[in-house]
Length: 240
Ligand code: PGA
Image (cartoon, rainbow, N blue to C red; front, top):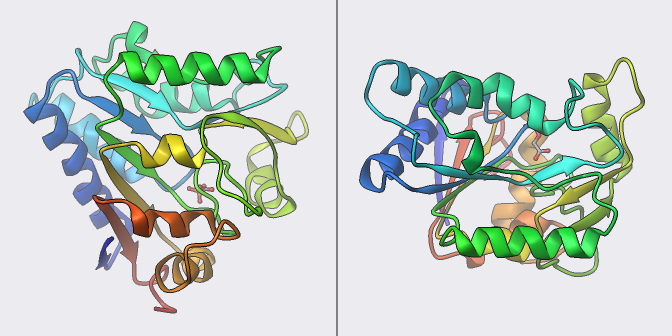
């Protein structure tokens, strides 16, 4: 695990964004694993600017998002599908047919998981996976637990996650369940970039980097990945 610290989230956005851009410049049909939340926004801004300036085209790229809420219509303003459309997809030349999401409203979570795994495999696997980290050390919606998960599954969100994300919900209560890629699906990406910014992530960052590999801090498994880069701002790195 390579750990780099920067002065600001904006600087991290440029570095992480450039990693994605370089991936696409080297492989025009690259498969990108994408995340939602506040953390990736500077990275997505960088990717949009790179597209607008003519530096890169995403027209042959495929994307797979990490997770989606259950019991929320896909078009709801708080769905992760909407988030991605608003913050990235509508601003670049990505082909909508190449956008992949877990269906949070699938009747059969196991069948949905199998469908997603098959689609990732058919695309050739994920070339570079973006990750944030939860205050409790989660990656995607893999919450602290007694074992590491493998493929996608339906998860009951923890109170810590509900508290962190409820601020975005004003018309409906925040869903208690989500469909998420499992830790195994994340670990199969060829390259991973995890970004953590802000003081609220400092404890999780400490556990991830200095603690044992332990499913009670799901991000700690990333130490076992052959190509994982962690980009921190000084606040997130404060306890290291
Ligand atoms: P955030 O979420 O980017 O909104 O902080 C990250 C996460 O929970 O993984």
